[in-house]
Length: 478
Image (cartoon, rainbow, N blue to C red; front, top):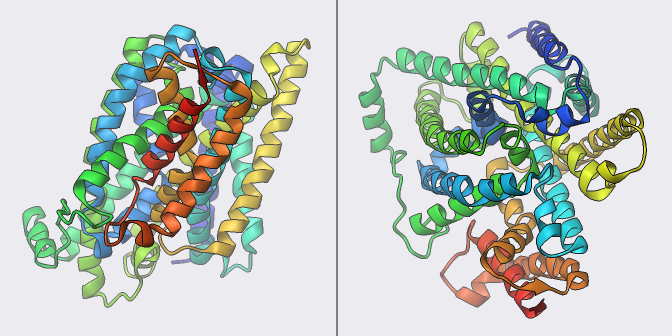
């Protein structure tokens, strides 16, 4: 496939995003940027959040992992659905009742200033790590597929993509992202369907025949019944529920969009609808992963993991499929990156720098917010370069692993606030939030010595949260 043609397609797609941003960003202010003036349509938010929840990692990593992990990821997805229901009926009523712009304002209300700042900093670190890992995966694929052949360095590619994101989020923020995410989610899902349909036709298989072939190769196993395995179904379902509660329910990026919906009831519809849709969509991604492995065998493809789908789409399929793949891939890239940059800007401005309380005029506040947005973009650039150095073969596993360390303290903080009536010694909270991930790291590192054959997987997040909860219990006061 001609790399210049693919590059022109990316530029055209970006021009469309800029047009949408221009149309939706007119007359925007800080309130539009942070929470979309609380006037977003819940159906648009729910549909757009599919793209944010999935990202390029799901688009590439989940299908690529089928050869090694079969359909086990569906166990985690069932947990996701449970988590979304819990968010809708436990966390959202709390956020709406307190009329929060930043959800970490709850920690200030419940525990104190340092607890509030600790929660905000944990989110900033967590989202920065997770979003840039997702961004790196897609940027690296575009680099290998298109820009290496044109002699463009990796750091230049990353910089240009970040500039693109800055351009269309700079003014409108959440108000713009609700619409751009809807467009991008549509393109990503169309890419999934078209690529799957092409492979079924090429392999001359029907839907059920393809499942039968996948089953013969062991790809369709959903539930792992080995209690000692990291992929044991109870561990995965439980971990999936808590991953959703932390990475959505107590994550400013995801809640920022939900809180932009006017009514609590509509926001709850958005959350529950998103949970059911994700089960269906991820099932389709796993099905496509099985097809990719069947297709790869017929075409003698040697790539695996995150490189399987890009290799097949760009080198072993017709040009029109390659174009669809690139459009779908960049559609998966932008929702996870633009929302993260906006949410990090919001959290830094409101939670860390106290922009809303600053005694300055609205124009000065807007200038300050834009400067912070540029600083966040610079941090994204540095982290993507770091991931390039690490260069893990399966980013989905790495992202979920990192989430276990970074989001655990947030889980413990919110759980303690919601399920107990105790206050805490606020000045000691930051030390608890640092100690819990460190202890979790050593538990994970030496788990074989501690537990023998029993393996800890994604439930490390729960252990981390429990350690934080226990630490807060130790520093409680009536």
